[in-house]
Every structure is written in structure tokens, then in C-alpha cells.
Figure: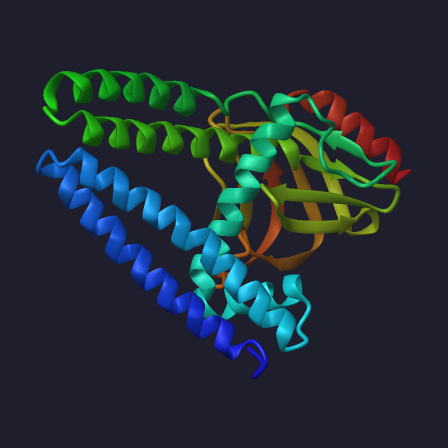
Amino acid sequence: MTTATAPGANCVRALLGLMATLAVTAAGAAAVGRQDVSLVLGLFEADVVWIGILAVSVLLHVRGVPVLDGWRDIVQSVTPRPVRRAVAAEVGCLVSLARVSLRRPPLIPSGAEAFPAREGTLAITLAFGVVTLVEVAVLHLVLPWPTLSVALTLISVYGLLLLLGVIASRWDHPHYATSMSLVLRNGTHVVADIPYRDISFIVPVRDGTVVAPTIADGIARLATMNGCQVAVGLASPRRIALTANGRDRSSVVHEIRFAADDAPEVVSALDARRR
């Protein structure tokens, strides 16, 4: 954070504290049946938001800081890095869900060939959806406070949307092959970018030992609920990590297996590119 944006960051911290206080007070008023007080506090909080955004933007402009750059600096200074990463991940999942819903093409480089792995990704989501519907019905029957029931319902629906977004992110970021290499991904994270000269073999497999990305015994498995269908041997061991999370330890592997909807087609396409 620069000295030019420090006052703006302090204002934002004060606004966040005020908004949290108003939100807690409004929730307490709603819980005791004072819906009128809760509504007034909610409207006041909405005013605090837009007035605060306007005031901080004006302050940045007066101090000669570009507004968008200043807000970016402020957000980075007032929110811990894990929070920023979590919010970015949620936004990315929702964007992928929108892209998949609109049938947009997957995010791969121009000229690359995608290897989708959609089969076996929806079972848990469907089960979670059924549980959510049951939960919503129970909440409306059991809870005597309509406002709380609606709030919990919205949280449940949002959780389901995020789960769908995680699946959509994998659909939107498939494995792919370029003219030079095979790129294997776990969602948005590139697990390995393997030049064809570093591949010793590519064969179809039927590996159902795991149903989620795992590394064990020198073999990385980028599995779905259907397991893995393609095995890629490495000419020399390499160190990889399954996620971009800094706490996720990297491991040395000599083989990577991944899920694919059409394993024979994937193997044939990769063999053709290796020649």
C-alpha cells in the first residue's frame, strides 16, 4: 500500500467496521420480531456502502491516484491474502459456471486440442442438490422465523452454485495438447506441461483406485469419480503439485494418469502429435 492510498484504506476499514455493526444489529432486531427496525438498518447500510465508495473514490482522485488502481491497492491492503484467494476462486467458479451454461468453448490456447473429462463429475453434485432441496423443505417447516429460513435457504443455494462452479471450472479448463506439449490441469491449475520428447509412453488404462486427484507411489492421478483412463509415462521423473496452494507439497512422479471421456481417441491424437 502506498502513502497516497493509506487514508482511503483507513476509511474502508472504518466503513467495514460500521457495516458489520449494522448487520449484527439488524439481525438481532429481526430475531426479536422488529422487522421494521431491521429494514431501516438495512437501507441505512446500503447508503453507507455507496456513500463510502463515492467518498473514497473522490479522496483518491484528489490525491492524484487513478481510482481503479487505488481501489485495487486498498483491497489488497485491507483483506488478507487467503481471503483474496478465496474470493478470486469463488468468482472464477461462478464465471466458469456461466460460461458452461452459455455453452462457451473451453479456455485453451488457439490451435490446441481439448481432452474433456466430464463423465463421472456430476454424481456428487446431483446428490448434494437433492440434499439441498430436502434441507430447504425442512427449514421452511421447522424454523418459526421466515427471515432466518430465507437466509439459510439462500446460503444453501449459493453453496450448491459454488459446487456446480467447481465442476464447471474443470469443464472450462480441460487438459489439452498443443503442437509442442501435453498440458494437464486440475481446474485452473496447470499440473504439468510435458513436451512430447519427455513422454516415454501413452496408453489407455482402467484405474479406479482413486476418485479424486492424488499422488501416491510416484504416480499422479488426476481422477474423477470414474477414475483415470489415460496413462502418460515420463522419460525422467519430475516434481509436480496438484494445486496452486502453497501448502500443497510437491512430489516427484514418473507417471501421470488422467481422466478422459474418450481414452482411445486421446491416445491416438497424442501419438499422432508425438510423431
